[in-house]
Amino acid sequence: MIQLYTWGTPNGKKVSIMLEEIALPYEVHAINLGQGDQFKPEYLAINPNNKIPSIIDTDGPGGKPLTLFESGAILMYLAEKTGKLWPADLRQRYLVIQWLMFQMGGVGPMFGQANYFFRLEEKVPYAIERYHKEALRLYGVLEKALGQNEYLAGKYSIADVATYPWVWRHEMHHVKLEEFPHVKAWYDKISERPAVKRGMDIPKK
Ligand SMILES: N[C@@H](CCC(=O)N[C@@H](CS)C(=O)NCC(=O)O)C(=O)O
Image (cartoon, rainbow, N blue to C red):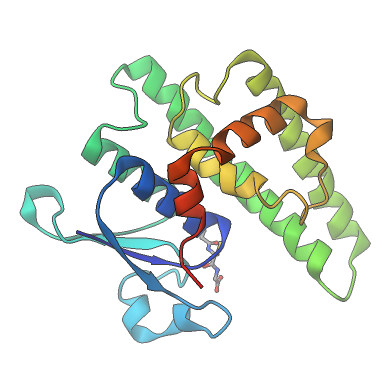
């Protein structure tokens, strides 16, 4: 059984979407970031980086429990464990890893900073401009890729699972999806997946 430690943010939703897609049973533990649950010693024992998501797979490799943090590592682990959303072919697999790294190193941090500075009451115009511009540039990269392929790495994969919940926040970083029609078509298609709908609803209110 997978124990999932999460909250209602894009990085958390990546993992609940994945668990729904691969249909592995899991239990949800809500880590209320607003109340500082991520700093409690019992959570720091699971994730020393005081962030969500984390998992414990009680039935990990060799039948022993495995504790993991970092959403990209968790997605790769779950993909390898089940062989789902994860190509067997090495060339295809590395395209998936490439887009996953693009999400982890670019999309997540940059959209996250844009969200933060747009929301901040005390406006910092330089920061807003910097992260908004970078978010738009990254949408441009996604737009081009999705104009060439239906999904980021060809077939639906963990790269799409990782990127989707960040695009879900497009209004927060002031991006109009209509200006990126291929991203919009991809986003709308993924939004229709029953597993994605269920995963986006975790943790339940
Ligand atoms: N690189 C990490 C980032 C995780 C992350 O930034 N989580 C945020 C929510 S989306 C968080 O837990 N923030 C709480 C904090 O920083 O105190 C991952 O992908 O797992």
